[in-house]
Image (cartoon, rainbow, N blue to C red; front, side):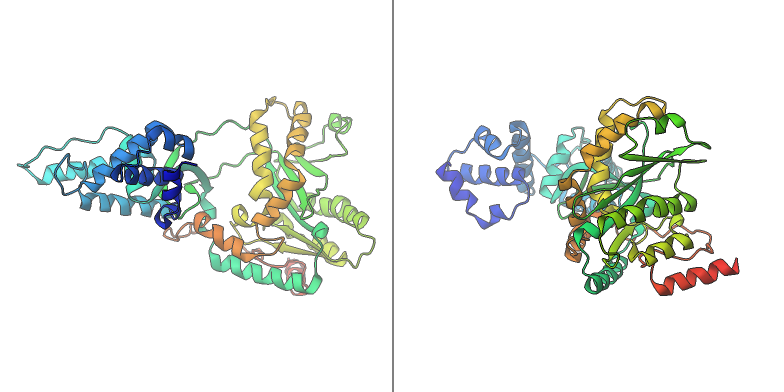
Length: 443
């Protein structure tokens, strides 16, 4: 390693910087001041940043350092830049991070206001036209420019308090039952269809956030795939729910029926009846095959879909010594192992595949993509990142700042439902089953 570079990398101020671009900028400026002569090319090769990007970042940094001194004036005054900085940070914190174009537009709005309030200005000001200015603005004000992650609108309302309450209940279950990883399961559904490449873009977000979010409204589509994985890295056969009134016989004649089970529903969504049949005919029999002794406890973690509120299914699970824990509402992007890794890998493979219009022509493609995503490493990583196995709430706290949006939005007003709330509860407990049984008897 170059001795001059080694000298600068020992500085605590350099080590504390998050991005390679920031380190390269500071080292270049220090080396020029001390005449050690580290070049743009050398630093761009070492830190793996484009030479032109490094050059523009250094220019932006020096321009900011010259504020109030002789030389070319800044395009925004210090006060204007502070106002813009506050606005960008606020938008990022409420899940509406700004793109480069939007940031540039708001910067030019500030210049317009200055021009309107100064009838006879001493200096002329021009509008900002280059997006490269946004790179310098981000660097000066501790923002990073990242690919934006779409966040479903309803998921913006989960709180850390709700997550902590759920983890306390999980901790009690783990202490009482000492679950083995091969008997800790997560079950969830995902949509199967023609996945088109999304229109992606980048946006500004504070450095302390791991992700840039943009809230969007979910659009419902059909054909559901029910997947079940365990913390040991294994998985059970998946269930494909087709939007039909009858099951196509050609599905059952294929060679993939050992890995995929088939059922049907009017709209392709999971229902209480489908969930009940899955519990009775697939899940419990396969669990009993895996364990020699029915006294071995099993944990099933799933979301709070209304199909789970089937009394017969929950009583069968409780009788089989299987506890069912429902994650807090709108938190699956944080707490559900399948959403943390497996489904993301699965959908990426699907997008790269060519799918036909008719589902029956896509079965082998769907299975191939599913097998590529259901690897031991991917599954174990999902449970670890969700903090479920090993049970670790600190992992949830680490990612909460990036995935939980500030509660500046008021929750949407919805009609009160008469169903029992199951969010964040253990729905196979005696207390819950009794409450559900009483409600069923009333109706």
